[in-house]
Amino acid sequence: MSASIPALKWLRIAAYGSFHDIPRSIVALDRDFVLWLFDCPFEDALDDYGEEYGVYRIGTNTMDAKRALQARSAMDALPAEAYVGKVPVENVEFDATRRHMMFVHTRRFVPPPAR
Image (cartoon, rainbow, N blue to C red; front, top):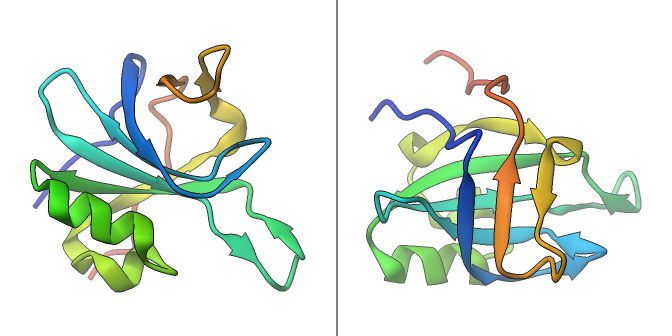
């Protein structure tokens, strides 16, 4: 499956898992009703959260979204082809509550490695 990260538009936050200053694990809904997971896990080696969100296209399956939020790692919960790349945390804006809407400010992202 080929997909590009939804950028330069507001996305509705459908659910979020971990939260540290900002949501670190987010299921967002685009205007085509496609679910996306933005995952920024805690990195033990840094003793902090990472600087990038891994982005996964979930599609329309809400059970996959729930499973991905509950998993220790999105890569454990979703098929490899769901991964579409990474975006820097600094390029993601949230509404004032940081719980309802998000905006990805760049079309530049790190794509997944070629297989």
